[in-house]
Length: 266
Image (cartoon, rainbow, N blue to C red; front, top):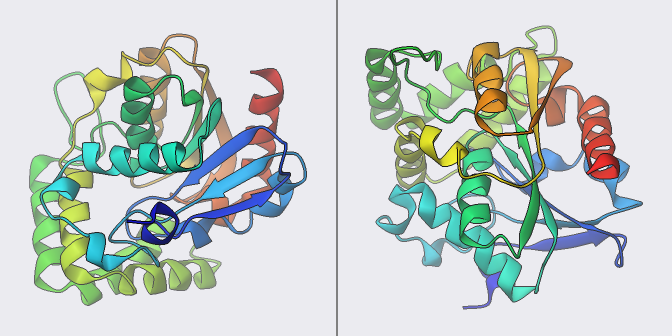
């Protein structure tokens, strides 16, 4: 299958610039990066895509067994890299995609040479000595609600995830993005996301890494950002003056500036 069509790949920016791959999170697509793209396009070659099951990716490529694991999403990333012969890539992953980037880097270090983890969480469920932000019962309830009424769940949860109650248009956009996702595919991605535990995988990261967190985020609390920084040797944690789980929408200039600063220093 044509990877460009399968994953709705977009290549833009400076043709001879360093490669930056922008990867979206659960319930989203590459459009979530549109406010960051202009600030990066002048100096970087940008590669955007949609995971199978999201956005405008080819739905015929969907395989529930493959996408029931984060490894399946990492395969999407690496197949895009192979198709376009991308090397020395800076992988920018939002939310669950930050962990997808960790897995992809471990599998193909010749392709991905640095990571930017935007609002990451290696495990959403609290554990002894670890605060993920949710109890196991919280996650069970979230998934049960999502699976029984996906559209209703999306309308209720998207504004909470986005935060910024004073800017309701942001929550409305995330709601629309969630609702545009096929419910059956979204259920699989949600289980893969919220039940994953990638804490051990963080220890495999050896490339330069930037962790971006928001000062208030109901999905990835501040303790998680500190945990990721402390677990990945040499990583840098930057707290954005932003609230909510999607700073590429709520604070695009600060998000882009942090990425550029990291790229310049790495």
